Length: 185
Image 1 (cartoon, rainbow, N blue to C red):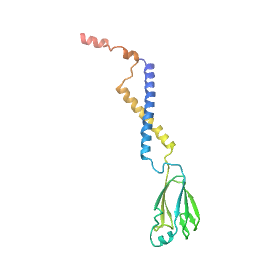
Image 2: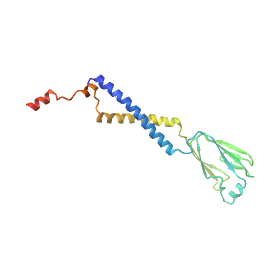
Image 3: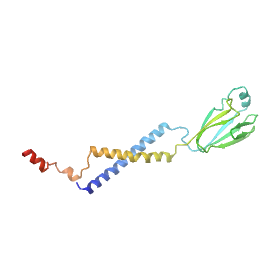
Image 4: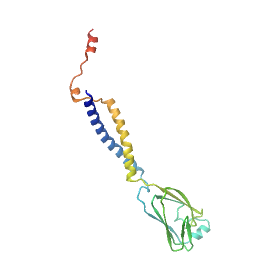
C-alpha cells in the first residue's frame, strides 16, 4: 500500500473514530451531570431570607430560629435578600436591616464566607458561594475529553485492525520469494 492510500485510510478512520468518541464522551458526561446535578447547577437568582418576629428574644435566650439555617449555599451572582419581620434591628455582615424593611447583598465572589449576624445564637451565618455548572463548562469538558479518547481509540484500532486498502483485502496473501526459496530449498 502506498503512503497516500495509507494517509487517506487513516484520515477516514480518524474521522469516524472522532464522531464515535464525541458521541460516547457526550453520553457519558451528560449522564454523569444528570446523575450528580445539584441545586447550584442553575442561573443566578434572588434568594430571600426571612427573619421572623421574635427572633431577637430567641437569640437572647440562646435558641436558634428554626426558620433560619446556620449555613446557606448560593450560586455566583445570586442576590441574598434579607427581610426583617422582627421588632429589632438586625445585621448580617455589611447589611443593616431595620424592623419591617429589607436589604440585599449581591454575591459576586465564589468562596466560603462567615458573616457576623445578629439573628443567630452563634453570631455568624455561613454563606457558601459556588460557581455553577454551565453549558460552557459542560462543552469545555466535552472538548477536552474527545481528542484523547479519539487518539486512544485510533491507536488501538490500528493494533486490532491494521490499515488495508480494498485491493489488499481482496488479494489473497502470497508468500514472498524469500519465504518460498526457504521452504523449497
